[in-house]
Length: 139
Image (cartoon, rainbow, N blue to C red; front, side, top):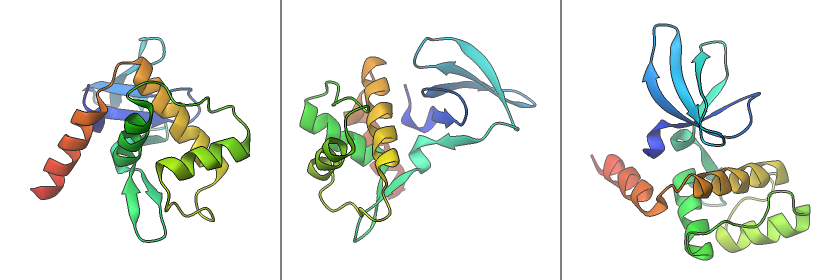
């Protein structure tokens, strides 16, 4: 599974892997249940590789944040995204100590943790995703 092909679709739960392109959009597979479906241009889609988290000094790519969580949790699932706001923010500050708490809301933290747990269940390899990201930045 390639990190550059993982997307979030607004209004639809979970994450999706892009399988192929069509004239009107893309065919995706849900990482939650494995169902395939078309996503058209009318859907609001976000590529996970284009998402970054604000810190006080720079923006950290989401792949790096996932790698930090994976290192902390030894590749296993993180805490539930349904924990209290205080628990989520203290957990996130352990993973990304320098994150900008004025621009990164609890809802953002919930989403990051939820996505991480979905990727863990889908047996995503976070070590290779970060290598791909750094290789593409060096080119």
